[in-house]
Image (cartoon, one colour):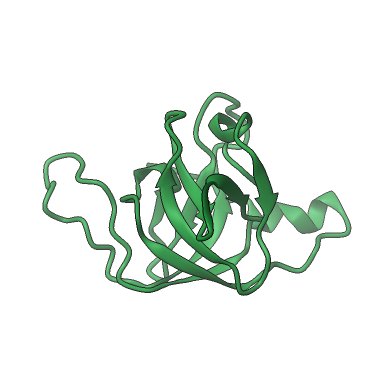
Length: 135
């Protein structure tokens, strides 16, 4: 999936082994672009496992702007706020359970798609891949 603000950007679905880069598309959100073409958004399915080249960094925010590193190099892609159409939906869940919107990540980070999720056969099977976001 690609976030709502990337709907007018050329895109393609992610594949296992893809090398991605976090990128500011100039649309009000950050997303993943193809390593070979920064104009091409790569849409990631919920449940996709990602491995980053370095500890993931987020943009400075709030009262602790120096706390940028997440302390992890792996994450699972999630969709949040599904019931709110005009909000960002693309997020990463880290091993400690923290969920960070993809648009809050620093641009220029490199990730590899490790594994795609199994395809849901029914809407009930897809539900566990959606996560409620409380922050």
